Image (cartoon, rainbow, N blue to C red; front, side):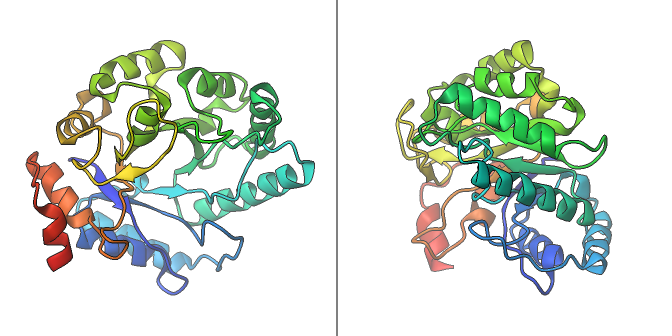
Length: 293
């Protein structure tokens, strides 16, 4: 089965069941969500009965709950040179891992962090020490380091930086990678030759570490370091290149998650984009259809 879905909402009432029902309305077979607002620390207690309902509903539809992904909030910055901010990041990430465990979620995507002027080496060392402090338990959710576009002082902008982090993690069973197509393009990788990227990851780190892929077109040229997502087929990467990534046999068991922008900041595009992906056919009029339905 094609594992395709999108970023969906989450609320305090129905929680992950709300997320699942939104995903199903798009024709998705998996999904990704935040366990609360990405910009703050406010979190509601996990209702385990809602988790059980979501798992049961997915099973009834032949879908695999283990492929559902959580995204860590943006406010976590393990690379920060500020000790108070780094301590907060470590503490809050630990809490998010507990929430993932309560939600029965296996993978949580994390932006590695920004060094905010301290330099790449110090930033990477901070990430490594922070992750080693967080990943002390032998078992638990896996943290997936997201590949970044290189905006500002972001880290994780190339495979070598991801390799540096993973190589120094003590508990390697709980670390992985999330590839983002827009970020890779904006960081300088030619995603039209995705097998070459996978080959580099395989030789330097190991392809088994790749656990999730964010499928986004880009509004920017390669190596722009800007990180501006575009709707599928309406960016510089293009529909055919993204289809080739989605249907790459080496990635068939890995969830693919759309993080494309709402049309006019109002209309979710995911049902229409998922339809195009399933049909492997680009509709140049899809934006107007989204607005009119």
